[in-house]
Length: 128
Image: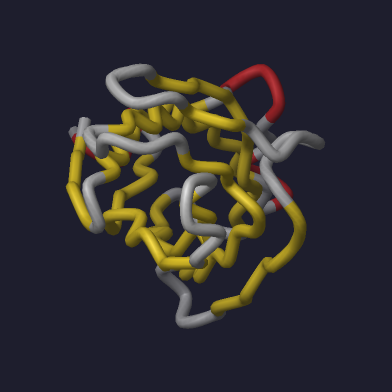
């Protein structure tokens, strides 16, 4: 697991290889990741948008951007957390992701950016 605090919001990421949804013979590798967003601020925050940078070990990369996460724009109260699981498909058995969340301070209505720490996605058989 990797974690990073920026702007008073802690982002933790855990990754899982999805063997049942992968097909290495066709260069299809599926990973899931669990994100925990913990608000260490004294004000509630709302996650408005996400931006991801995804890198395959073959040099391919792509950007994914959009509203909220998994169909919601969660509000995280001070001292509370929000957790979700999503997935990423790669063309190789190893890759990397990082990104940002655009958030809103619900007290001041000011927007700010929270960094999502870089994390690796590695198929277990690649570790041998």
